[in-house]
Image 1: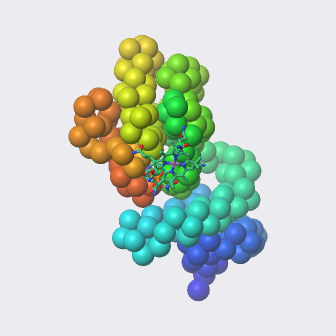
Image 2: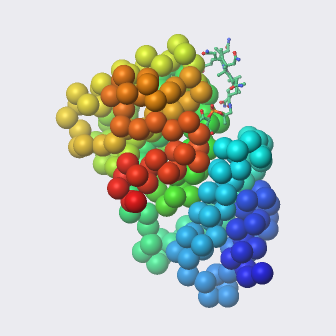
Length: 211
Ligand code: B1M
């Protein structure tokens, strides 16, 4: 098995130490940083997302895989920057005002990084004005809003309206979270909805025009 294949397996299995060591070994063997992302890390997270979607693995396994991916990225990021291989697309993400749940949002953020987006995470309980200010500052192609409470769903609608009314540069808005569905996304004028982190990565690439 090649080092890249071993790395992919280590990330998918959530083996952080192995992921870090194998990333370093692949670089030492002369692998290009961009190839590590495209041929090992992105496929690993895509496989993890697919298994999660099919109920073959659950949140704990997804979180350890996410941590292993982060370990690998910590080794790679300086090399990617040095090589000038920076993500072409930027995405903002946050949990809407009044909502402190962040586990799902964090998984989506990792999957977006795995899909080679630069991700700016605004955290939880993010007021609409903070989303608007961040769009003006970072000029993302995509904004993600997460909500886990039925009581914070209205804040999601308010955030979409605030972004549309702000005159910020055009941006695609994706929404998600346990109480959200496609009908609600349509009602509040979002551009996309994803039921889980794996679909959120697919949707992000479509909305940003990567595929
Ligand atoms: Co809270 N909580 N919680 N909670 N909590 C729920 C959501 C709840 C369903 C539990 C229940 O009653 N059965 C319920 C909501 C009921 C409702 O609104 N209908 C609830 C409640 C009521 C509350 C409090 C009000 C409780 C209280 O204080 N009385 C309170 C609210 C605090 C607040 O936010 N203001 C509260 C607090 C908390 C904790 C802080 C203790 C903790 C959060 C810790 C944290 O996030 N750091 C917590 C937790 C852990 C849960 C449960 C148990 C688990 C949520 C979770 O992380 N799921 C939850 C019950 C449950 O879901 N079984 C519950 C795992 C996660 C991976 O899934 O977040 O759905 P999820 O994300 C998925 C998808 O939704 C999607 O992808 C993710 C991965 O596949 N997705 C997106 C998410 N965001 C997306 C964005 C996208 C696309 C996809 O595009 C941008």
